[in-house]
Length: 210
Image (cartoon, rainbow, N blue to C red; front, side, top):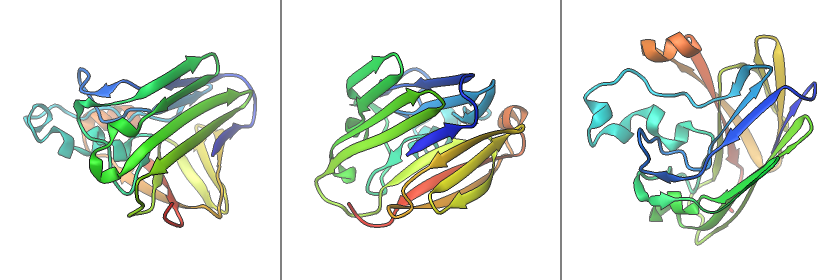
């Protein structure tokens, strides 16, 4: 999977590893954000208005806290789990490259031995790779991307994302994945003042169990 931009330069890319009990934690080990010409293309949605639920044991029932709404995989249909023990390992970070084994961020139901997520920045392209071994395959894996932009095209190996006239192309293997675009209507004022009334969730759903 790769993001391709129509002009080189002006890219800002950030990725993180860590664990799922950091201060103000979201379950997002291995996630990334991507800006082009100061415009957010692939985003961290952030947090909505604080409520009692935000600071209770119901925290991870809030969708913005869940890994299924961050730029990480759902493994065997399972999201990441909260807790200090749910962490990345074997993290590698150097100029233009980042990788981590994020399998430890998932509970036992994910049945994953290792899942190495890597990012490589090459000129005007960012390559995203997932190398993994599952103990068993029970549900299709999904690769999730959250975007602020509109998605005028999704299918046949290409997802187009547009933000304020700037365009990114997400290329993937159409034989391996089906692309599904889910508009998410925002109602929380703390989110709408940043993103407006709608964002999109792009899901690349594996066509077969692996």
